[in-house]
Length: 470
Image (tube, rainbow, N blue to C red; front, side, top):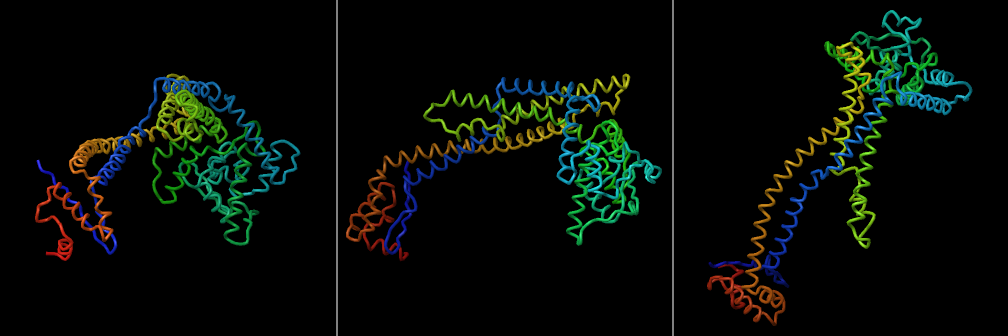
């Protein structure tokens, strides 16, 4: 079997060069093989490498935090952690009042009263003695939820600024968006131009939310705080649909009524924060377990002379790798399974055999469900990426075999043609007094490569003739 390998010759004013040779072809093949190896290894980097102990520890963390949620979070009014978060928010409200000029004398009601006066808004109708009591069915127990300006959402901010500019008050009640014109005759938004008024409107919205986060100044007991951001969106959906003259569905109305009912029982921003605590503990424990196990493994398997801080961090960082993300999915899934089981059983117990929906959602940890949903989304996305990477890896494996066979062929050609000793005639061509020896070497190389006799350049005239064209 004859093999032909022709080297393209390029002649310029002062140098002669080849586009390729066996050695350069071999180097190019090695570079291509390295890229194919990276493609094949990319699949491994996308797949989790959890062992049985990883799964067991992750599930144990989820179970532990599920028990914390059942016995220490529970539902509003029966929550030891909830009492702690209530106290924390009360102290933060007092601290904020001091920053805003409160003298620090008195209790939390005094601090809240100071903030209410400083961050006055036109939409603070409570229903007790107000016209809104009959028109909007407002009461001190629900006006923070129904008033859109009291909602800690983007739409709540929008309606707060709108009400402050127009001296209105917008409410969602009975599945309808209702506005009260000339809501407060004494209210005046500060600022001399639009940008300054917008800033003052935002400051009033934020400051008034802080004043109400632990209840109003006249509250007795725990007080009604601001609604949780998750359930406040049920108001926003109705407000958006009514503003666009779209019908409000029965589902939207029922969901809004459910959100209002659990709010009246104490499910507000403070209790939503209490529910975040076991979810955060679960997240922290799993990441800590992963990092500690991998750090120990790194020190056991790595020689002391080869250790470095960067290598150790790459081995145990608990944030971006798929292994720790799989462990988090298992942990949060276990947490949600225990929490959902508890909420379901207590819901049926409270309903006397039928599910009491209000009791169920009072105990359901929405923050945990949301975090588990994020993990499931990440798992699905990684599965798609792995599927694509595996297809690329299978193709790369086939290419790798071809490259390996090609490299073996190049090694055989290099042995037959003695390429290293003969292709140095390029250097000889650069020296005008050595061109005859260079031509002789090039002719021998051409013969070894089975170049037809009519194509071999043996003399300088042949080269000139070749480049002029024939």
